[in-house]
Amino acid sequence: MNRLVLIGLFPLALAGPAMAQTMDHSAMPGMTMPATPAAKPAKPEAAAHQHHARPATTTAPKPTTPAAGEADPHAGHDMPTGTPMDHSAMPGMEMGAPAAAGTTIGDLEVPTGPPPAAPSDHAADRVFSPAAMAAARGQLRREHGGLSSSMVMANIVEWAPQSGKDSYRWEGEAWFGGDIHRLVLKTEGEGVVGEGVDQAELQALYSRAVGPYFNLQAGVRHDFKPHPTRTYATVGFEGLAPYWFEVSGAAFLSDRGDLSGRLEGSYDQRITQRLILQPRAEFNLAASNDAATGMGSGLSNAELGLRLRYEIRREFAPYIGVTYDRKFGKTADYSRAAGEDVEDARLVFGLRAWF
Image (cartoon, rainbow, N blue to C red; front, side):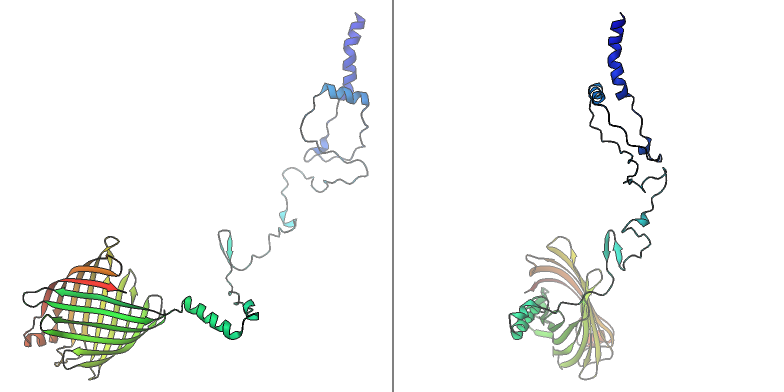
């Protein structure tokens, strides 16, 4: 019986040294301890029994305390728990350094200084002659912003049916030039079918852009009808006002010293992509009376129109509309004396085209 007990206790006696392991407190945060002598290597028998007593695991090995006389690779990193790290001492983490000059938009820093100078060393200059390179750069400028173009627009070409006195009217312009400088021709007039032209004028203007939306214009205007004819020095403007109103205005000084002016405005209200309603207004003013031409001082006449056009193509749009014309002041008196109507309302059919 005693022999059986001793045989049962014998494996436990051999496994005891392997199981009785001490805990290494030096690897715990805040538990830095003095270095201890290196541990003695385990006996081969104990290592073999340990292999059979405890299965192998895949856990990462624990850091060990360096032996006496060896430098601690982790020295300087052992600190009490809860101690904040000083990032300013780390390379590249100087928190007090001033930020670079510029404007920050999100994570992108946009410089605010002057732009870099344009490069002056062109590799092609080493191969081609200066004359060839000058011609090539000139062609490049013309094709990217310096190109000349032209346009002809018939803004109003309409016919107004009336009992026995069908009338017609036109208004249009043509221009040639670039983005900044242009030569502009404007014309407008009206007449009665079978009776000829009642009013006709032509303007030749120099136009210069003074912004993205407005041009200043100066030139000459000549009235072919009514008689006697008049020639005017002209200064004006045209452009696109806020909310997409097309506006224009001009002052005219005649060869007889008479000063007059004109204001026009229109707006394209898109009902669909092709159906467009256009209200339009025109006002003519004069600083003095001119009985020969039937122009009175002050507001001489005003015209209001409403036209609905359908753009078969952007360049070709027939329309239908109504117009109302009213004369005021001394101009109305001149019209009454000549047996003409002071006000007139018409149904008009017309065409708006450009190319």
